[in-house]
Image (cartoon, rainbow, N blue to C red; front, side):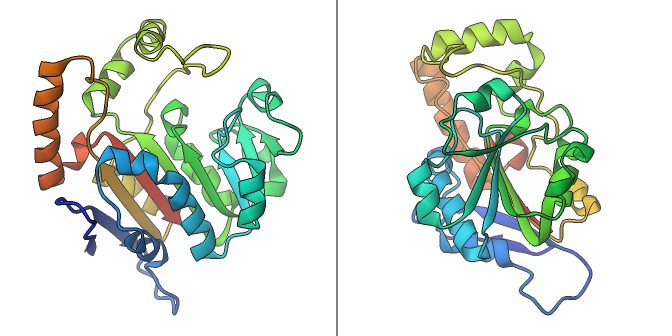
Length: 274
């Protein structure tokens, strides 16, 4: 499997693992990888958060995508209406919860369905999307494999699905996975006072297929995706109130970045092209 190494403007480099199907096609088999390469990816978690909107915009432009869907956008879509108009795309905001979509202004086009559910409920979406993306959604999906399979059905040939998610084996997310939701929700609200049920709810986290390991690549390949790009990001701010733990974590993060210990990544971008 070919590995692409990027050279970002930091002392560490990010590696993109690019899986191409065995079938021979005349088109560029590295469409998504080339777009990421042009962005100068730095595999530190701050880059992942600060640049996600730029990443999505660049993929829209580079793919020539026009029919776009944000999965799980709910009350807080990535782009406002003015930005969507500037992109020149037809954007639909999806969510499993009708109450989340109801908060949006009526200028948004919405679609209420479960991305990991029965696609018979949305037959008009089969082959209808050029690009679908999500942000901190896949950790809440009950069956990640089913979600990726459903997105494959919804994408037009050459279409891309992108997910930005936490990685299960990072310690804060492993603890979140193991402890009861009621307890973890209380902890999150204590550490992040803005996370209220009214303004920014804390949803149960299941972490189905939330990993940067080879197992995820194989699963996506078996579904039928022909270009798979997995980008790990390292580090987080969960220990900022604990100086000693924060220092130890910072040193460990540098080791993980240097050696690209993907199973210990904190966040992941996963992009897959049909």
